Image 1 (cartoon, rainbow, N blue to C red):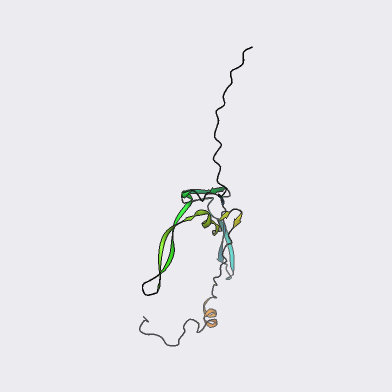
Image 2 (cartoon, helix red, strand yellow):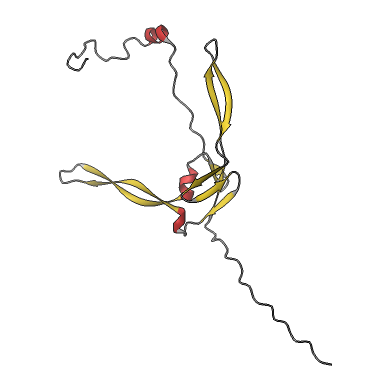
Length: 158
């Protein structure tokens, strides 16, 4: 009885695993509510709109709610940014020079509320601007606040 020839199965290299240091970044579109002033002067919410369903950053396309792995060992996952560097001058004063530095996109995404990095979303900044009341109400409430002095400098007045 003759033995059947052995068929050789070619060895396929295992797919390259991402390093353990990769960062998972998910683009989360934000909803923006539009404010408008109603007929009686009160603020009302208008129609809301969302950020676009995908965004391109540094040549990498981030689709909404789909994770993208960023590797700190990959130079393509870095962005060039100007960062201030201070050094003492000849007269003892501190001089500032902006130097181009490479920053990892994962670290920059951590501060952006549109991105979730390793399961953490940055908090949105709250709006602290105050809308003054119309006309005379604002003028009466803030009289004397606008100018620190009662004298008008005529040299700069038009």
